[in-house]
Image (cartoon, rainbow, N blue to C red; front, side):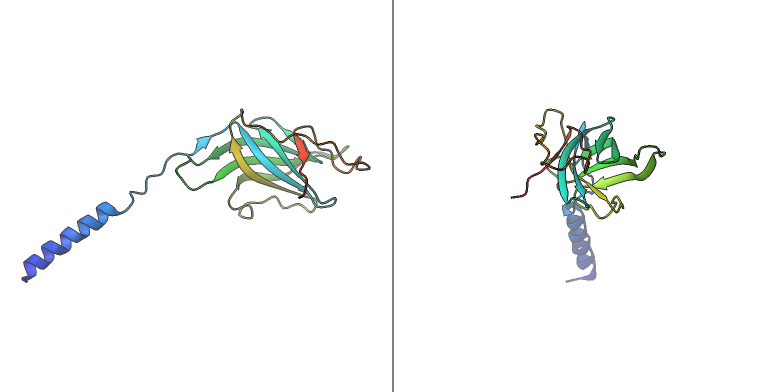
Length: 159
């Protein structure tokens, strides 16, 4: 085989390889109007799943959580939800304190996490407004004052 034929075959295989590789174009993330969040009160060991509509502050204990944006990958891509959260701490008689402002990712909760000695908040999913929200459960007896969870946040039950 001549050198010219080898070079032509090499170019042909290189072109075929380049055409076979993925183009790197990704579908845009889909904005959703609600974020499904998971909250943990480390003092009482209570876990709560709650829905936070984009642009509407919700309370979890002494925290006020405002979801600014919530987006998820299209169904044909790897599952991923990301939400831009602003989390403030509110104590009576004290100024509001910003604890967290940034993106949280459902697949990597430790990548960008709320660092607080009392509470953990994680993004579980972004979803359409028509999706059923977790049903609120009655608070356990004798838990008055431990966690101030509004009706949008409800404790999950361990199985």
